Length: 225
Image (cartoon, rainbow, N blue to C red):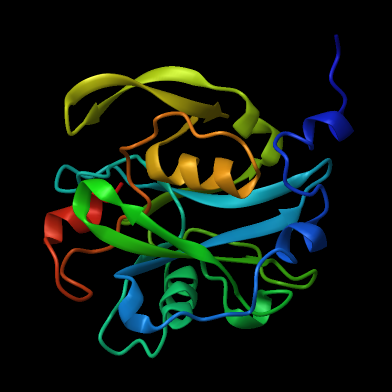
């Protein structure tokens, strides 16, 4: 059976349209001390369905998250007045999207526990405004690619081998145009769109410079999952 664009866009139980997807979440900013990091699920209306922005880290020998797909985001800095400030700062630093490029204020999705590294991550979401600057790579030393993942891609699972805390193991993943999405980031997106999780306990959510931010194991800031 051939699946048309309208049917593919319904992967998961979450609403179809961008306003309805965003409308589920409040304009709420939890206390800055309630999480150690913040990321943004930036959305747009693609040609056929809602899409979400992801980045792929630059491959570097010193970076344990080399080549990994993640959300724009990172650790809270001492100067950040709120978790939303953290998310907006990282969004601008990593892909050049500012608050004025968004269609509205950030909405608070929730806080996820990155169990492997004992780090709480605040998730925010927003839509790119119709006149907003498109995301781009600002520093090739940190980000190799930015790309938009269509919602329907999350409905297909492939097993790929990845290095985990238990060694090299097959893990559930989404493969899109050569980009491999797995672990924390994929789990958060599947939950956001109303798809069941699939034992995605590992993998990075973001990979900021370990010399920045507050507290914690610096190496873990790269490997958070």
